[in-house]
Image 1 (tube, rainbow, N blue to C red):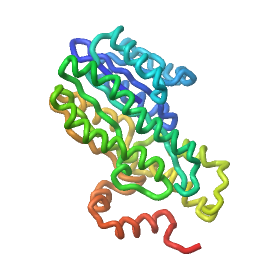
Image 2 (cartoon, helix red, strand yellow; image 1 turned 180 degrees about the horizontal axis):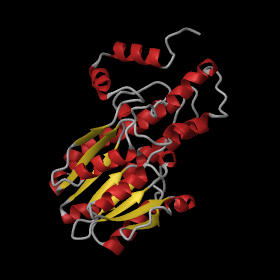
Image 3 (cartoon, rainbow, N blue to C red; image 1 turned 135 degrees about the vertical axis):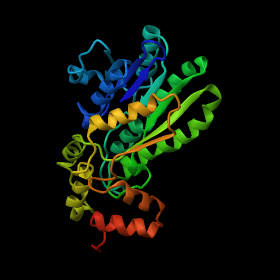
Image 4 (cartoon, helix red, strand yellow; image 1 turned 90 degrees about the horizontal axis):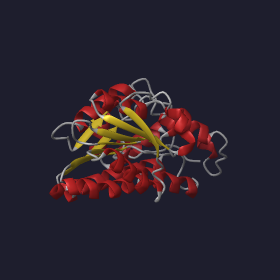
Length: 293
């Protein structure tokens, strides 16, 4: 999902909901949270899923088609928003899909798709929006990473790496865009309540692992692990992010929500500063990789 809004008396927001696992969850809540702050919202999705946004009916919310994996459709959508609504003041770069499986056996096509959307999709939007913001000498770009982009986990190497890249990009952009008055903010969600886990499991349902067939249950456990009892409510998460992104001086990073399922942020902090052998021991035990086959 991508959100853009114009600075002024009637700010505009563009929302790209290319997150099938979060459909009617976080993307819609972002739209409502921005609208609740008197922003005018443009909600967007890929053409075949436009009907999924019918519940976003509001005088403050418009809808357009946008696919972040398309080199043609991204500039077309951005230019449409600018020509119709004027200035884009904020971009919330949140497009993403899940990608679960052992790297040594996971489909390269699936890995490429994750990178195409989770990484390059964000960069496509940045490259189209920055020239416009630079001409106004103001604006904010919030790129959404993920807590496991900092502490990577087994069985999700494709997803974790594709969402770790936005961390590096944002830290670079924060410095590179400073001279133009553009803020770059890194949003680092933990587990947010959604149907992310069930969507991941659906993609794994008929997968026939070969050398990892004995770990089928552990892989499935990782696919649904973000949806534990402590997962953050999507509405609460969206409101927290929107409030901080719209601040006159946005935070450099917004970290919110537990790490994985029922593991809290304290454990995340410990693991992020731990030596590799500690991380390896923890995740080997957590995801059933502490045995020989």
